[in-house]
Length: 170
Image (cartoon, rainbow, N blue to C red):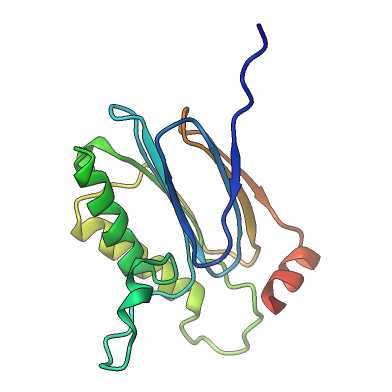
């Protein structure tokens, strides 16, 4: 009997996905960060493609964006709550962190969006009690990742410089 086909979901920037059946979650990252979460005991996996480090705290900020994958801090908090509602604590969850590249050439030593995204992700994960088991952050090239929620495996492919230039324009 042939193996059933595993569904594949491609995440766009600012999206996240949580699944309860084996699924392949895919995305392409430049300065954004991709975080994978897997709780094998409860059969759940998730991935986010966060674009900016911090949810805006100004009064005019719209709360509807707090549960999108747009902001590193708020999507991590949201996914932690989702896993908690399923009965998983941070110690039950395998976390892997990717992206945060500096895909735009910079002549100065300023802090880049990629670096800010990496810092925000590490800080919030630590504050919530998550201990990433893999981190592939920074650099100057974007990456393509495929996360198999059933096994926890992540395939990472670095993009060529020409691909990174295209990614920086999108």
